[in-house]
Image (tube, rainbow, N blue to C red; front, side, top):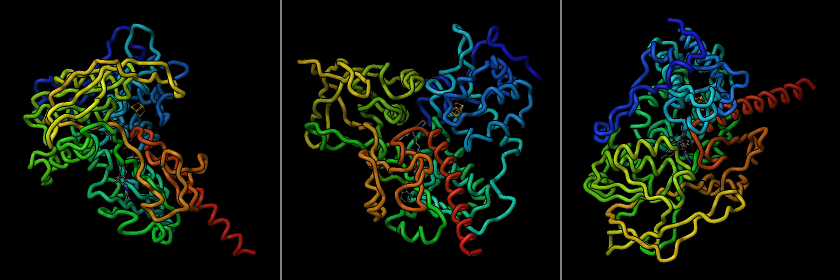
Length: 480
Ligand SMILES: Cc1cc2nc3c(=O)[nH]c(=O)nc-3n(C[C@H](O)[C@H](O)[C@H](O)COP(=O)(O)OP(=O)(O)OC[C@H]3O[C@@H](n4cnc5c(N)ncnc54)[C@H](O)[C@@H]3O)c2cc1C
Ligand code: SF4
């Protein structure tokens, strides 16, 4: 039934039903249910259709949010899907895992005292409803082009680029060193935020549209970048960032101190039904353990919540800044607290104690000092403030750096920045190697899915222009 807009004055913000913490602590299923159509329409109708849509401005994809909210409120759900999917290659993923509190919803301007529209949940509803009704179609092109493109990396950036290029008619081959499609959507982000069948459904759709996937294929090991340049008219590098940051600290080499991504990948693989020896041996299983996670980003939040679900005896998160200054989403902290995680703000490890394997973390209290050149206050240790935390599994979630890409690809002419990310011309998105483009985390550094999608879509457009220009140049030479 059609709803009048501007309902924020009388209708409160609502999210889809959230499962109780006591229940969700014991499984890896998503924590939110789905909106019923009437509820989604009612929530969409809270939009004020303001003159300057700050939600759209702060969405990395510039999603036309007010329009698809209006169409949803009017019950015109197929059109809402058309508008929402016109700018987003995976709205069902962004609706679930974008940090909306920092992006679209955090910038919603309905008057003070009223909460924002639940944009992410409506976006998820629109796309799930479209899948149910068969409105989501594979990217089958209306005409086939003879040119082909190669994409290295099947994460959000690579998949978004692949979809756009395939729709234009290019032959598209994706190479990935993993055995499944999705990159961090599959092996980083846990099931309770994004169920794996959601990613598998996208994979199936892209494959149905004619995109060829070459899995278990590491570029630089199984095939060289030079060979791929011969094979394709243009290449995209969308390989993400995977080198775990470390810290130097006494006792860091003790057993049972593990990198976050190894821990999360093992848990995700187990959930997917794979045999995971490190879980079977207990090395990457938190069951029955006192767990300390070091870090305050999304990865740390995923680790603490995974440890709870594996049946840890206690789970603590140690972060050197305060809650207000953490990089992870506030919403995730709230979920973790509900699930029983204890946060120890303004504290950092000083040493790991144990004999062969870790038995405790000795930590120091911190305070926030003056800001550095980036504008962030620098944490300073508080003298004599040591304390110990019992720990028989420590998970290090300190962020990620790029691998050495020129060495990995055997391409010394591939220029990188001082952070090791791939250098691109920001207008053409081309690297220092002709016809090789780059997008996603490998250009930005560790970022967000929605930025990966944006970059992948932009890179696809630039690759198309490059191929077109080369074709026009060769036609001009032939005509001479
Ligand atoms: C634990 C965790 C939780 C996160 N949670 C969120 C969240 O809640 N919300 C959010 O928006 N973002 C989140 N992020 C960030 C998000 O996952 C990334 O920003 C996003 O996946 C980057 O996309 P990408 O395509 O650039 O790279 P990736 O997703 O990393 O994909 C890169 C792909 O390239 C492949 N590859 C790498 N090297 C090679 C090679 N040599 N040959 C072939 N293939 C190769 C990899 O196997 C991988 O499949 C999280 C990240 C982590 C680690
Ligand atoms: S893509 Fe992310 S930021 Fe953009 S509207 Fe959807 S949830 Fe909000």
